[in-house]
Image 1 (cartoon, one colour):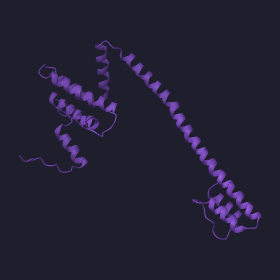
Image 2 (cartoon, one colour; image 1 turned 180 degrees about the vertical axis):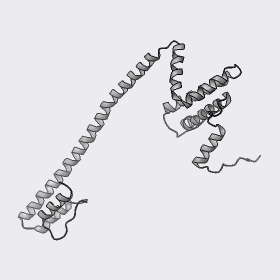
Image 3 (cartoon, one colour; image 1 turned 135 degrees about the vertical axis):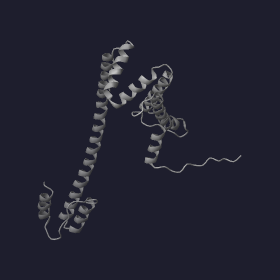
Image 4 (cartoon, one colour; image 1 turned 30 degrees about the vertical axis):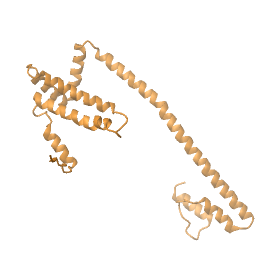
Length: 221
């Protein structure tokens, strides 16, 4: 039996987005239970394809993105619950309310508050606990950031110390050769220390002192 499957042609990002929108249009214009559940289910499948399938494939990532998994589960749960409402007479209102929450975020906060109170949980307490957890996370992160910056500063100081030592030794060795009357050797010592120099160049006629004063002015020292 021959395999009749063919590899689909490559699609552009715009074509992919258009096809996904065709499969599951944004239900704001038509918030029927089926349209809203379809949009939710398609997005849950997209998150599954983007995160779960790579994680379970050999050679894939070692860890799951917790936020992405939470989003997947939220889309699944909403689609699952909405489909379960079909036939109860409550599905149309639920679909309209979900679409309304998407269109205006303030409604979401009100409904979450009402749901928690209905379920016997204090929304204020949940808010305070989450804000306290976020404050602890922030406080714990600051020492880590400070340690990283300190390590970077120490590495930079060490590098500057090595550069300064090298320059100082080069200058001293050049002075020794000047005392010896060997100007060529002195210039060689200085040139070796200037490898990689990319600053202002000598104009070919000025003295060292003149070059120093000119370049200081040009660079705003």
